[in-house]
Structure formats: structure tokens, C-alpha cells
Amino acid sequence: MHFSLPKEYREAETTDLQQRIIAAKKKLGSKLCILTHHYQRMEVVAYGDHVGDSYGLSKVASEQKDVEVIVFCGVLFMAEAADILTDEKKMVFLPNPLAGCPMADMAEMADVMEAWKSLEQFGGDETFMPISYMNTAAGLKAFTGRHGGLICTSSNAAAAMGWALERREKLFFFPDQHLGCNTAHRFGIKPEEMAVWDFSRESGGLAPEDIERAKIILWKGHCHVHTTFKPEHVEQARKDYPGVQVVVHPECPREVVELADANGSTSFIVEYCEEQPAGSTIAIGTEINLINRMAHQFPEKKIIELSGQTCPVCANMYRTTLNDLAYTLENYADLKPISVSEPDRGEALLALQKMLEIC
View 1 (spheres, rainbow, N blue to C red):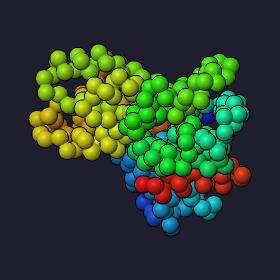
View 2 (cartoon, rainbow, N blue to C red):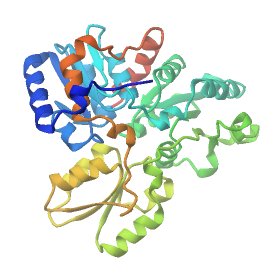
View 3 (spheres, rainbow, N blue to C red):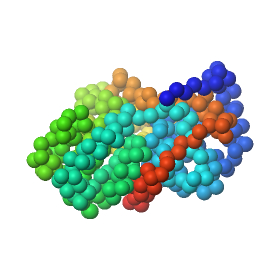
View 4 (tube, helix red, strand yellow):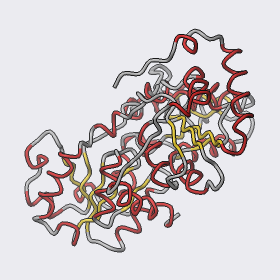
């Protein structure tokens, strides 16, 4: 996909962009809702009507009544979910159409269908409950809904897994291997009861006995930001900052989560920072824009990035700029909104509604 802002917006000064955004928001009034994810640039977050994680923002989108225009400062799968969860009169826009998600791209529709075809030999949806992480394309959310499954986010993964285990014997969790592993661990599922489906290998690299033994099949996908954190980073932080509190995202590898003081979604991490007393030192294992914003928001606490050196930035979240936001707000009537068509829309809605119902 090719996307280029007009020169007028590319070369505009920051103060000009800020004034244009403020004016556009005032003009649109209650017809507009700007949703901003925690990983967005600080200057973009400043103009959000709601700031949150993918679960919280999906819930906000579904609750909008009089709003006509939703501008989602995030990535494509989030804007798609917002479109699915709102009525057809509402227009959803992604300020930077190039903002995707490498993890979501690790679960191609054809690969997941091939995996499911193999799992059908072991009971299919009589045995396996599909749980799709929010970080998937609309087509895979539709597949999940079609087979009675649900969507989860890092905020409600435990609730989703509990719901699924009450209804079926085994789980098929995709695309994030680490969130699935860390959540399954909370339910007492042992490592030997987890099997990783490697989409690059025939039959996922699994023998029939591996699938029969497994309580959960985990897709071999990951977040390139959260897998940069290593156990040695936790150990070094504790050495450098005695008494440090370490909080990480559950997309981090299991060995990192085990060493941390706490783990949870981006909203959980924000609340964790809020709750720690003044003078606390907090090392965070997640995306750098959230960490920088927490450090700015809580100057009475020492808030640092866990690894101390990697600068874990989500390049796709970082794509959205004030330039993009100003352009979208001033020209939305001439832009193509995000639109998920039937039958994917209806089937994905089933899975997303289950997500919202269990929390």
C-alpha cells in the first residue's frame, strides 16, 4: 500500500498542526471520538478523547451512541475491530493506513486454515476452542467466531481462557505464543501440555502424539518489541537499582515474566505505576512510548525501560503523527474509512461480543 501526506501537512509546523487539530475537534464536536492507544506518541495521546489498551478502546468504541466519526490512533487490527463493533452509520478512520502489526502478519489466513484442517483430525471444534488474540486480521476473527471461539486481549486473556476451558477440552491459541503460554501457566497447564505450532513446518512440526498430549496448541508468533526483553535484563535492573519493581507485559517470554514482580496489559502497567508510592523505582518491560509517558506523568518516581539499552519501539504505532491526525480530521469526508464486509463482519462480531461479555 502506498500512502503519502500532501505537502501542506508534511511540512506544517507543530504549532500549526496543533491549532488545526484543536479547531477540527471543536468543529466536529460530539460527532467525533478520537481513540488513542497507550503506545502512541505522547503528542498524539494529548488529543485523544479516550486513551487505553486494545480491549478498553474496543469497549469504548462499542459504547458510542451519537458519534459519527471515530479516529483510531493505533494500528489496523484495532480500527477493524472498532468498525465491526459499531453500527454502519459510524465511520472509522486509521490516521496512518500503513500502521499494521508484524505479529498479526505471522498468522496468515491460509496457514491458520491448514493448521485447523490438521486439528480437525483430532476433533476439530468438538475438542478445540479457538482463541484469537486481538492482534489478528478481521478474517481470522471471523474464523474464530465461526467455530464458537472468542477474541482476547492481554487484559482479558485469563478470563477468555477460563471461559474456553469450561466448554472444550483443548485450546487453539493464536498468534502470540508467549501470551498464550503465560496465561496457560496461570491455569496450571504444564509445559509438556503445551505444543507450539510452527507454521513454517509441515504439520506445524508436531507429531500426532504431540497434539493428543497437548492441552493447548500455541501459534509460533511473537511481538518483536516484547521478545527483546531477557532474564539478564531483570537481573541487571535488580543489581543496578536495589528495591526496583519490575513490571512486564505478558507478551514477554515466560522466563522474563517469572522473574518480574508483576505482569499485565498496558492498562495494568499504567495502573501499577499509579499505585507505587513516590520515590519508587519501576523498570518496565514494554513499548518505549508508554514508558516515556509514565516517566513524564510520574516525575516523583524513577521509571525506566527494563533493558536499559534496546529502546523497544513499535515502529507501526510510531507511524501515526500529528501530521496524520490533522490531515484525517480536516479531510475525513474525502477519505476511505476502514470497512470490514460481510460475512467476515458478522462472524467476527460474534467472537468480539463474547470478548466483551466475559469481562
